[in-house]
Length: 558
Image (cartoon, rainbow, N blue to C red):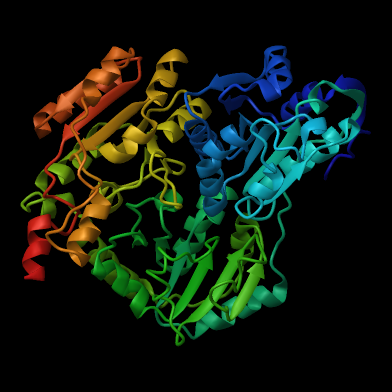
């Protein structure tokens, strides 16, 4: 039974204090920013509110990644602030990531004084228009008394339906204006359920299936439905594949887990999708990467698509059955269907295929020994509930292929493919789960884009571990150069950067690693320290991906 909501509370406050009150109502604990004079009143109001901590970053891009990583790890909206057009432009990458990754985020941007609008005022940009195509909703507030209405709406839009980023533009003169403010209750996420007819339709479709599979995505995680997914898979013996960078949707050591549909996925794993006849798409938008350039779901396959967002269903593939539902509620209802389990043998066969191509013991003899052993040592030494983030880059292929995520909510990665994401996202994740080990993986290219946030970690005593694979190049792009324009590298070679020394110079612990024994000593030491740590790994530039070398690619081009 839902208790009757109390009447909205009313108080006379400045707009800035009203915004902070809205944050309090939503249980916001951390706000990320780079300070700006256009929204000083909000910062002052946060100073007066002991339940909210302000995290001041070194760059707005880093701040936005922190907020996005915090939201992914906590399940609560990330909040980030910046000033006018310049700060807003810098944090755009985090907004785009939140949009593609379906992450709840509320962005507050200071705007020029209302009297100066339309005159090309200092740092003026029409912020609500600027962000409109990459945000779920944008608004500029012009009337003080409407601040609670529109800010609470922003939190609602960010968290309901398909989650995403909302951008709120705040003219600086608005923030000091007082009004009688009326506040409503915190957001309750709607949790729609499937109809009986829809459930019956899924049952009938599965009754005729020989090789059904589940592709499980971020909607399962967002609704907290990991256990329901496991129960459904177990009851009907239907195997599960994770969509791009949603590895922890089902324990990877579960006998029904058949792999991750991402970049560079082994062809043997992709054959599982090719052999399937019914695909149950649970909480995934069936993205370009998940579907391998939109090639995996062919006309002869039957598709059941369940998602919280009606616009996601049928956006790319027209389903045989499309159901708008919260995944937790939907999976609970699907447990009522009556099926004779006939897929156990097929699931077991495909599990063997998965294990054969992801077993570290098989790879230890190959030319990619060092990188796979790094992942093996992480598996051996990290706590089971350790939370891993990663940047964009080919180095992530070893993590995606070999690491076994066995607990829920242990992975945070950008489906947008944003470079510079891993380490700042780890800071947000650590603030969301301060008692857990949080570790980021980056290449030298991506790490250098946001490495200034190591100083943020030191200043606020956020003890994350950052692993940097340093091959002195933009490796992913170099790989594509060698495939399409062999022997003509341009723009992808990078200079040497002493990441270890830089980390130590700003107060972090630094380790430089050349061998697997040195890495094992470094990870053991980093796990014991109470400071941020950077582990720099000297990487062979020839080892360009899990399945190829530059030398091998060039030989194929001759």
